[in-house]
Image (cartoon, rainbow, N blue to C red):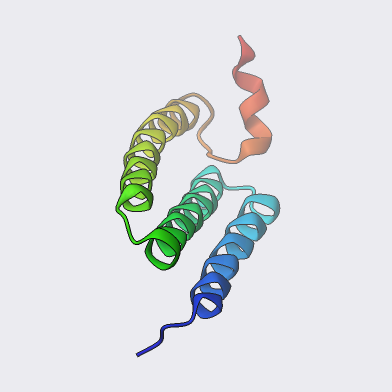
Length: 102
């Protein structure tokens, strides 16, 4: 069984880097949203890792649960915005989102 903090932090760092790459390289709004979800999951994983290995209490787990709830609410709001963009413009590319200023 792995009991080393650095292994878990490397996994979290990998998730964070994949999320940043997805946000910076994609033009599809849904793909960008998935990248943001990866970043939030990485942050939640860090809270759980540090809570488990440093203090042993459940504060980090509670913060991670709050991050999961926040990510679900953010996904619902963002998907409704993307649906409005798709209905008006017929595409979900973020290049066309500036056309919705009307």
